[in-house]
Image 1 (cartoon, rainbow, N blue to C red):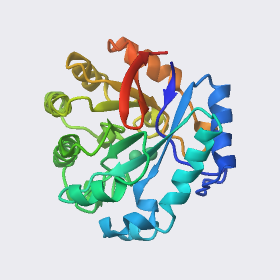
Image 2 (image 1 turned 90 degrees about the vertical axis):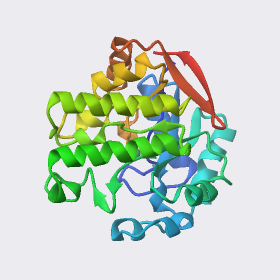
Image 3 (image 1 turned 135 degrees about the horizontal axis):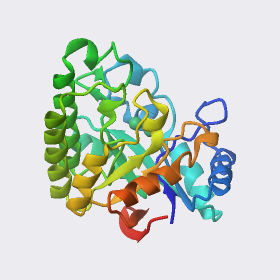
Image 4 (image 1 turned 90 degrees about the horizontal axis):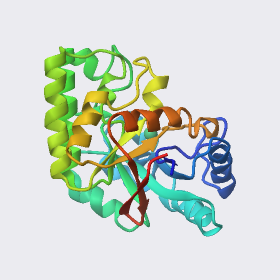
Length: 274
Ligand SMILES: [Zn+2]
Ligand SMILES: [Zn+2]
């Protein structure tokens, strides 16, 4: 089985489009690329219902869409028999765990992605000379990123950690022994969160680093601890659904994986990979 469990429900001009027709475009591309099932995971900060979580202009300017409309489009497509799942890409906000849980609890999610894109208001993935990178050394950016990611793992809010080493996006990294320590500590935290999966994402191939997330060593550390995986493109356009997913399957196999996680109503099961 091949799943693509991370994509943003947009029209071909990348505008948010919460209609069944928009879902159908993604399904069509998935079929063309041999993907069996796709999961929609729009960014949590696009919705007015989550406004109270945000304090940055980037998020406050965006949280104007209706979460019910988004959910209804995917649920209706599902009801029509399309192979789609309902998810959301949720920024982990330390200290706001209860509020995040209560805001999202009423909706019929199949799975929730946990992401770290900002730390204390500074972006990780905006630009190599902005956000965290403008404030801290590479070593310190990495340290803070993985502390936040381990917090997301321990929060119990999420089913999958998305793009687990996003911090490598610009190709800047500490010395290998320091990187290895971050990998090991993070894999330990994910293992302790029992059942939490990590995402093998081909989005990194389209970024300056030109690598799949996570690093092969981090994925092997996860495999050694029995941590399950999903595969994902992080498509923001219908044409990117399933992009390079064959590479992610080969990559996971090379790390020792034979199964992939399939979600239904936040219950996980393992299916043969590929
Ligand atoms: Zn993301
Ligand atoms: Zn995303």
